[in-house]
Every structure is written in C-alpha cells, then in structure tokens.
Image (cartoon, rainbow, N blue to C red; front, side, top):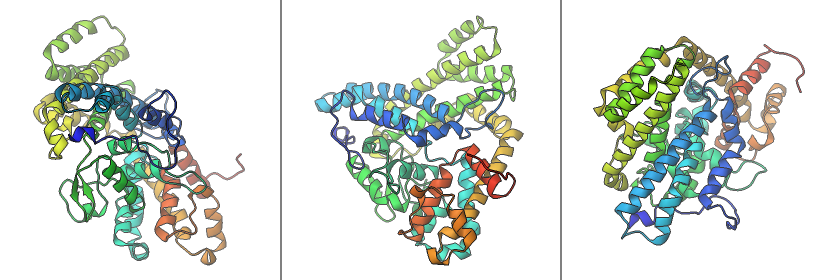
Length: 452
C-alpha cells in the first residue's frame, strides 16, 4: 500500500535520534520558526509596500496564516485517509495520518515562501533578467543545465536550497528537515532544463543543479513517481496539494482584506465578493453569515468576520475536492490545483480573481514597488556578479572591495563559477526589502556615511 511508504522521518544532514516528547515532524515546525531565513520574511513584501501607516501582511504573517490553514487541511485529510484505507494501513501509518500529517502540512506551509527574494516576483524577475541580459558574456562559463537554473531563477527551487544547503562554516543539511516536509513543498518537482525542453505543465522548476542529488534522495525516500529521468521530472507528492490549497486560500482572500484596510477597495465590494463566494460553497452558511453580519457596525470587523467564514468555506471545499480526486493525486494524473478545479465551476471565485487583478495587483502602489524592487535587485547583482566570476588574482581593487560586503558564509572561492554565483544569489535573495534598499543606496552613493 503506497500510503504506508510516502512518508519518512529521515532528514537531511547529521542529526541525533529524537529522544524528546516532540515528534520529528513537530521538530520540523519548530526548526523553521526559529530559523533566520523564516525570521527575515517579516520584512519581505507580500503585495503592498512595507512599512505603511496601516498594518498589512508581509511574507511572515502570510506564511503563519497559510500554516494555520494547512494544519486544518492536514487534519481533515488525515482523518479521511485513515477512514477510507483503515484495513490497508499499518498502525504506524494510522498514527502518522491522524496525528502528524497536520504537523507536516503546517511545517511545509511555513516555509513555502522561504525562497522568495526581496520584492517577491519582481525580485525573481530581476535575477533571471540579469543573466538573460548578460548572456553573451556569462553563458559560456556554465553548463547548459546550470545556465537554465540562472535564467529561470525560481523561488521554489531556492527554498529547497535554503532549507538543505550547507553554507560555508555551517552544519550539513541546512535546516535538517525531514524528507517528508521537504517533499510537501515541491510544487514543481523537476529541474530547470525541463522547462526549456518544453515539457507540458513545466512552467517552473523545483531544484537547482546544486541540490539535484539532495532532491533525488527526497524523491526516493518519499516514493515520488518518476515521470522522466532525463531531464529529471517527478509527479507531485500527494501532500503538495494540501500545501498549495492553503496558500491559494490565503492569498486570494487576505489580499482582498488588506486592500480594504488600505482603502483601495470599498467595503461594499469586499462584502459582496466574500458573500457570493461563501454562497457558492454553502448557501446555508451564507445565510447564517448574513444574519451574523448585522451584529457588526465596524467595517473592518465586518470584513474580518467574512474573511474567516470564506476561509472556512474554502477549507471545506478543498477537503472535498482532495477526497474526490484522491486516486488521481496518488497516481500523479491530476494536473490542476484544487482551487483551480473549484474556480472552473465557481463564477464567484472567478470574479474574485478578476477583481483582484484589476483593482489590487494593478494598483499604483503595488506597481511602483515592483518597479523599484526590480531595479534594486538587478543593480545589486550587477555589483557582485562580475567580480565573483573572476579568478581571485584577476580582481581589481574595486572588485575586491565589492566582495568584502558579502558575508563569508556566502563565499565559495574553491568552488566552480556556478557555485560562486549561487553564493552571491544566496546573499542577495536572502535580503529583506529594507536591507536590499539600504545596500543599494550605499553602493550607488545615494547614502554616504558611517553606520554601525
């Protein structure tokens, strides 16, 4: 029975056997919470500029909320799996699905955005564009697969690197998470070259060449289905669908709440969209929500209440769809996200997406920070990449000074050009919005002076 073999407490790196009361999967959650990479998410933009006079979500608060939703989805999915396959599961498997699947999904949700650079997707675009625009000079220094990693830079692949890579002077295995948690965040389990080769549904990728062997170990240990050996492509792990659903639920709904708090959209529009969405899942819930809404006079409280009801409705819908399509999820034939399935049958959900694109993601404040973020990230790479690809003896004085700004754990002088460049990308992509902006202003001479 495949459900008995798709999870393991094996983890990356050197680690002692768990002898405390927490399970290995609870330890994953705690390791992420206390990691510096997770902490830095507090100053990475979700959608709206940070900081502002009104509190809105950043990557850290978003990840915490996704984790909360993911824990609920994991609990409901675990109960379903035990109920449906009780006679085929071992006692250890029943225990895992009832008491630990929720911990795995919650932990994976915590780190689903941990590889995103400062300024979100515009930061990703800046990194990829830097290599595209300097192709004639840089491409000959890399293999075909290495170059594909760089010109398609992807936060999902970067997350696997951050969580598993050994930095200079640090321990093996990165954060040393279980293979099960790592498999659960792999939305695009293939190498970058698969995108270039034109494989269907391979718009993004899940691991760099530097972490390929680590990913193969993860895939093997969690019994991920091999779709292609060359290029390396796997079917998604069954737990990925739950992590993806938790993220989709939160960003679709909470971006609306933030936009309302900022006055970008009206209370009436937000209420109507939320009520219609609840109604499309459960008409009785919509009626009860409308009655309860009469008790609130504060507009923000009204929206907060409806936001909670919408999230609950979408958790129930996602669980229903997970159950309906479980056989396809297990054999790797499902090719749509759970909420994309719902969206195809729900006009109200389609309207939320259309409205968000038009009124929220196209808002001037959002577009301004995307433009600024792109330029900041591009110029930082332009400052650090040219000197790092040179031999030490060939670097001029200014180039040596530039590299002195990079902390030692990101410097791989004995590595290949690819490894050296990835070290710079580790440094730049790990920056918070504020740190990246401050460093940009200093190296450009906009801010000059001693800071401690």
